[in-house]
Amino acid sequence: MPFTKTIIVTGSSGQIGQAFVRHLSQSNDNYYIYALDKNKFSYNKKNIKNIEIDITKEDEVLDFFSNVKELYGLVNNAGIGVFTPFLSRTVAEFKNVLDVNLVGTFLMTRESIKIMIKHGYGKIINIGSIYGVNSSDFRIYGESGRNNSEVYSISKSGVIMFSKYLAAHYASNNIQINTISPGGIKKNQSNEFIKNYNLKNPTGRMGETNDLLPALDFLLDKKNEYINGENIVVDGGFTTW
Ligand code: NAD
View 1: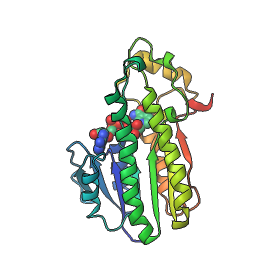
View 2 (view 1 turned 120 degrees about the horizontal axis):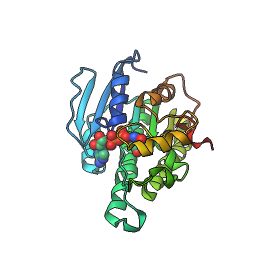
View 3 (view 1 turned 45 degrees about the vertical axis):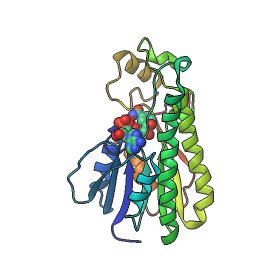
């Protein structure tokens, strides 16, 4: 295994992606990070390479991977949602969510595994959601008009199953594929939503991006060659009841 570990993080300019990239870039594990995002974004650090890419476009994904020779890890973090009511859902909205959350994840994973098989190790972490495990409680959204969507939940349960499927198929290649499913991360939600969410959460608060980092480190640890196909829910206990 190389001294420097190359790792790809998609959605790297988003809220969670930025926390992941910054954390990994400061780690003692000597990561070299390909920070992928559709948006132009610059980290300006010598162990981070910014790549502007749309992960739903196969030609762009293949072009990126033509320059990747070794790969320790892949964090499939890019994801989108849609928040309008189900009865006004359009086919375009539905397909768009599946395209990023599933097709993008599939393309990145397929190309990564091809490399990982060659050198006989690899860690893949897919970012799911509590809403890929449980249905969302529409009551906590109040009058906001915003609600988690059916297609987001479908896509995230698909991500969890994708991890399990691949974990079974590539365990013999020493590739571990797991999911981290975050609960709601605090950003600029309405006061009403935050109050309702906190009340439902045994920990009494929304998540912070830092809350996800222990699970990331744990799954990326090179000593982990046996935790495979798991879904680690990081939600302060929100889904326990
Ligand atoms: P975010 O919107 O802040 O970031 C997502 C990033 O993905 C953006 O930078 C966006 O440009 C990028 N992206 C979108 N489509 C892309 C494409 N086609 N190609 C390349 N990049 C693309 O979202 P976030 O809150 O940081 O979420 C990160 C992940 O965590 C997502 O998969 C999300 O579903 C999941 N998640 C988030 C929460 C939360 O509360 N924030 C909770 C559970 C799960």
